[in-house]
Image (cartoon, rainbow over all chains, first blue to last red; front, side):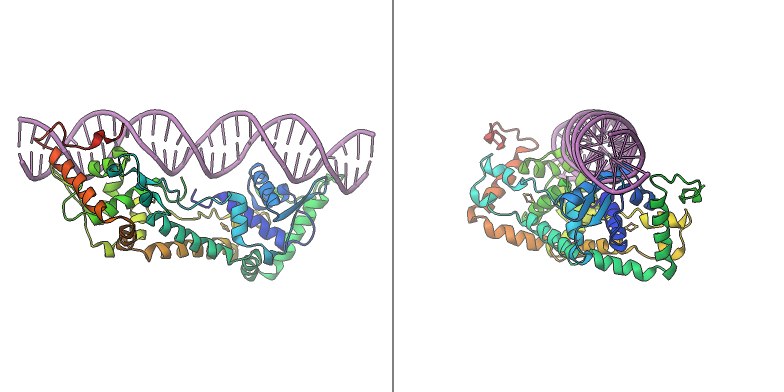
Length: 182
Length: 182
DNA sequence: CATAATGCGGACAATATCAGTCCGCGTTAT
DNA sequence: ATAACGCGGACTGATATTGTCCGCATTATG
Ligand code: FES
Ligand code: FES
């Protein structure tokens, strides 16, 4: 994939659902099935968000994840960094010091400070990160909420409650909604 | 490597030397040896720059590459795109359409337009690209020229001329300068 | 207390991309 | 004629991405 991986897309979409849902914890399995993505893979993303203090985990049978902070206080940049780990946009190999006229021993003026090329890349990276930092989870949530029709919210809540009641003690023959596809 | 690969670093440093050197063509072998990088690998980068109209190739025994335009008219973004091929920062997998409540048939309001998450990423990518577009090869060249002491320029020219005179008919025992290291 | 669902972590595998090598072809100045 | 050059394809090794699978500890529920 590109610089920002699918893990980021998965994580952001999950956090968006967590922000929309109330204070009921959603498990990674619920979120994976709900969005049609791999649970095994999603399960590797959430611990990173938990360690970054973005979500709060609760173990046990009715456990799951809750947003640890208000959506307004979670920037996209924080999420990206939590999942990808502060990956640099450009990785300078210090080519400049290998110039043949230095003969293997570059003077300090040549390797001092940041290379001019690297500097441009760092500026570009900062511009990117500033943009990501300027947007919060709440901002994105607002944008998506504007597109959805009014009945969608209750549709989602219905799926969630059906899912939760299907667990533990009620293996009811018609509780879940998975037979919708094929 | 990161999103911007070593090919970009190699290409930019080479173009910088091309901008500094006059109208004498420099071969990819010269540039590779001069900077202590792999010639074979560098040879895969230059054709991309040539197809993008950034450098001009001349075949033959004294051939090599020349800048096709003035350094002021070559932006860093053009170089990056020429080498990496317009790689997107974020590759949306359209998760939103797989929501379970849609049952495999997402309505058009859900998949219409650009996803709110994707939109943020596109803005971040644009910020990055704008920064790269705002810097020209001449700008970077000016920055590096300020650091180098006055004698460096003639040192480089000396290496180049020694290198060129070492070729073709003068396999002189002491012409080149490669025995400098180990 | 027993159990089932959950989070967490590690081992593993499939695939893609990156970085780099190697070779052969056609071209061109000397 | 020849040696140096650009161009392109085939090939390789290393690393990252995208998953899968399993076992362990924890915890609410019955
Ligand atoms: S030495 Fe790494 S960008 Fe110049
Ligand atoms: S569907 Fe890809 S970012 Fe939302």
